Length: 340
Image 1 (cartoon, rainbow, N blue to C red):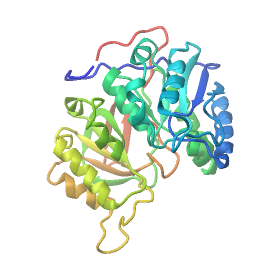
Image 2 (image 1 turned 135 degrees about the horizontal axis):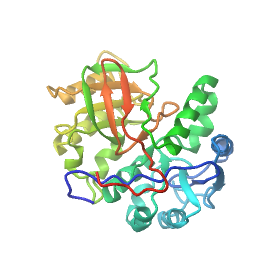
Image 3 (image 1 turned 90 degrees about the horizontal axis):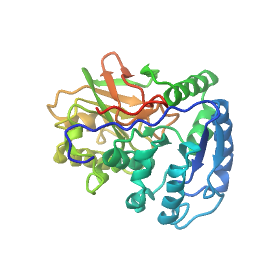
Image 4 (image 1 turned 135 degrees about the vertical axis):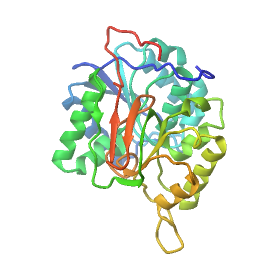
């Protein structure tokens, strides 16, 4: 896949009612306090019409250091799910700090033979980027069991939960473009403009770090892309540094637009006159690059996630505060993916 000017998208097959979705430990462990989140996730997915199973590594208090298991064990379980024709989608249990440990153990041939939606954010965004780079797979930067479906969704107002449930169901089962994602009150225009391009992104530190590996997204794939990112933890200066890394890598010179998620627990972010707001950090690094920037979008750790299917084309109008999916994220089950 690497080296071509444009990726050949590998869309998963659309899910159907009754399909099996597996919750899998793709990174961090499951503390006892979050077991109810997994149980709630099962309920949410069943309400969407799917059968749900927990993978064996999703065990309360099972861990190896900061991970649910050793990287090789996680990769073996994931590969088993990728090869199992009954499994039609994989939902991450949680994020963490493990995916870098098993990228080189993933069965890429199994993904190409039977692409499936993989849902998750945080550390799982690294998985989306690497699999996109190696196979063209459309990854779903979207909620997972902890704290997404089982946590943030449960504390959201009932109309918002219903809206998200319908949106996720359409995205996973429908073969028509979603169109405009439901805008939130927090969305802000940080630089006005319009853009259309391939959606690429994830947690900002994972975007920067993966580009230093053999699993990097080819630089030319960022040509005209809409870059989305979010961050949790660390400091405001770290965000500035990650953006500078992307500037030096040439990514910011290639993209046509930017979508920034709501930040969470970032130290020093707009806390005093000496500390900048996130919008100031972004515009400082972008300099005179005249690209639209939409900020504080519901993407990431701060609450329920709008799904961001990596690789599909989107339309961004930051002045109107709209972000629209122009292509479906999945394909009809009886078709093969055309070159694109």
